[in-house]
Length: 392
Image (tube, rainbow, N blue to C red; front, side):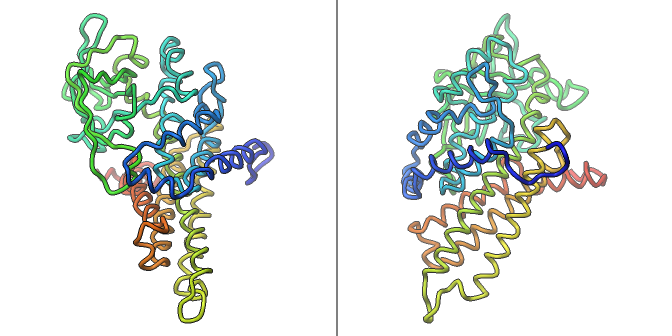
């Protein structure tokens, strides 16, 4: 943005927004409700997005992608979420859109040539294996171990909350190659792999959960998985540094998805507030219902501005930790607040599946937990921005 501050999207960005909105609108709320209730992956939607060339947005052009920035990726995922697809739609494509960034930046030419074009055409599903039951948000404490044996690694361990593991052919897997108690810096000694989920050595068990059931979340048990050294991303021992590259962008993408849910929930609430008559007047006329919606609108607009600033900073190579975290915090809060108020305005009908706001409510609630909790964001801002002592 040379010449000072501009709040306008470029023509290309507006075109992305319009095209994705058009494509996503072909999959209505009923489609998403059916997929959610059946716990069935939205293949038709995924294929349509792939066919439209959208999966390769941030993949470099030499691998068939568009080589665009995180700003464009957030616009895409916001529109998907806003169409009523919410998290079921966004999570189906989220990892293809940005999850491969560590491979793009640090993978070998062979690894990139083998996998990136397949991400772009939609043929390759990948899941992201970082979280473990015993480590939670303290990634340095993971215990999944990769032991070097000649030109292979033998991997054993357990991962949890792995989205799309059931649908995926490969996993981007963070392991330890040096035990925690043998490293000087606790984030050293971790190594990243992009490798096959071999069913003979990997057991995948879906987790029953509150919402977003069209996309599975799983426990993954890894037992003597043999991985060729060619599947390693970058150097041994630097895996943690590589996944850090993806953390700020991921926060921005999640923020955009939360924003999209908040917008569609608000839209549904306004429609119902205008149509539904009780005591001989539209319920939206009552300030007790109108004011919360107006308040949510203001909060969504404010959160969106921080998100736009965060993606602009990232795409222009500037530090964006503060803004990325703040955007995720505010968008998750505003998105859930809007969904909660939309449900309340619908009264008893909001609690039924018929008006879909209960699905938005369930899926937006996730945003205050994943991929990092609101509390961890406050830890980050307290310590790294305000300069207060580390609280955890």
